[in-house]
Image (cartoon, rainbow, N blue to C red):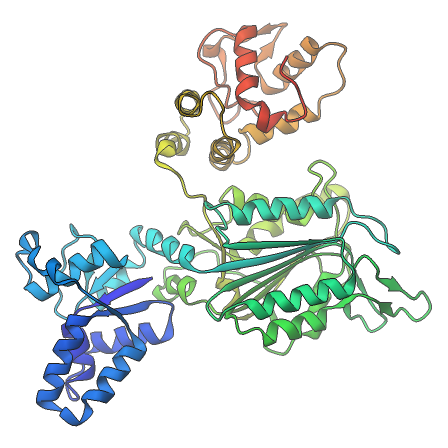
Length: 552
C-alpha cells in the first residue's frame, strides 16, 4: 500500500524539532512498522532542503539522507504542475502531487498534515487519523487487495504418490494439480511463480526445498506445500516420506526421509518475512515438536475485529504459519468422492468459494482458513467415524498472513452477484443465461471453463453450497447406471427437481427458494423444456461438468 505524504507533514516531522505534531509522528510510525510504503515527491524534498538550509544547515544532509532512506522519492514531471485547474482549491505544489500520484505512481492515498479532504479526487486526500478510520471502510478492501497483488508470491508444491516401501497415494498428484490451479488463478492466489515436484527421492526433495527457500527475497511470500505420507520415528519426530523412504520395524528409525526439523531449520534460515507451510500428511501435527518456543498452537482464532491495528495486520503481517492436516497421533484421509485428500479438498473449497473471508475484507488469511476448515473436516470425519484434527502453529503474526484474495469479480458478473445476494434465484438464473450468451458471442460459442468456474463459485457461495455446477456434477457422477441415455437424463432431472411424474417441469413450476432440491440451479432455462433445451444446457457446460462425456 503506497501513501504519498504532503510536504507539510514531512516538514513537521523533520524540521520543527519542538513542534512535531502527533499526526506526523503517527505517520512516520506507520511507515516504519508496517507494509505501508511512504512516498514523498522530489518537490517536497527540494522544499525541505530549502527550509533546512535556512534554519538548520548543519543537519540538512542528515535530514535528506534519512528521508531518502525511509521514503520512496517520486519524481514529478514539471508539465503536470500546469494541469491544476480542477484542483483550484489547493496550492500548486500540492495539486501537482495529486496529479502525479493519480496518473503515474499508483499511490493509494495522499496524506496531509493540513487536513484538506476531498473524496471526489482519486486517490483520496486524508489526514493521518482519517486514514486510520478509512482503513475500516469498504474502500479499504480495494487497496488491501491491490497491496496483496503487488507482493511477489512464490510456491513449491511437493507431492509423492508412488513409493518403494509405503502404500501408494492416489490423491497426491490431484492435490498438487488443484492447489496449483488455485495459486495461479489471478483472481485467487495470484502467485507469481509456482513450482512442482512429484515422486522424487529424499535427496531431491531436500535439495529442491533448500534451493527454493534460498531464492526467496525478503519481501516475498513463500508457500511450501506437501501432500504425501508422513511418519514418526521412535522419538515421535515427524518425517515427510519420499519415494525411497524406509522405516525399520524394530528400531522405528526412518531412513531416506525429510525430517521436519530440517525443513524448520531451512525456513528459519530463509530471509523471507512471510512464510507459509502446509502439510497434508499423517501425523503432521508432530512438527510442533521441532519448533522453538516462539511457535504456539493457535487454539482460537478471532472471527472478526473492529480494531484499526487488526485491519492493518494484513499489510504488516510477518512471521511463519504452519497448517497441518492432523495432529501428531492421527492419520490423514483421502476423499473418495473428489479424488483429493479430505484436508486439501476442504482447504481449497473454503478459499475458492470465498467462505474463508470471514470479515469480508477481500483477503483470506491463514487464521481464517483454519477457522473455516475445522468444522468442515469434523463433519466429514464424523461420517467416517475417524479422527483428523487440523493444527495451526503460528510464529509472530503468522495467522494474519494472507494466502489468497477473495475471487476478484469482473464487471460482467456484478448483476448476478447482486441477485444472488438478494436470494432472487429466478432472476439470477436468467442473468446466468444472459452471461452465457454474451460470452459465447465474444468467444465464438466456446464458453471458457474459467468463466463457468466464476459463475459456479458465486452460486455456491450465496446458496450455501446448495446450488451450482459443482453440485450438479457431483449428482451426475453419483447416478446409478441406467439402461439408456434418456433414462439417465431423467434420473438426473429427478435429482435436480427438473423432472417429476414422468414429465419435465415448466419453468414457472420450478422452486425458486432455497428449499429447492440440491443443484436445482443454474438451469440456463428460457423456454418450455424440450430435447433442444437439455442439449443446449449440456453443450454450454459439458467441458466443466462432463469432460468425460460426449454430447448426446
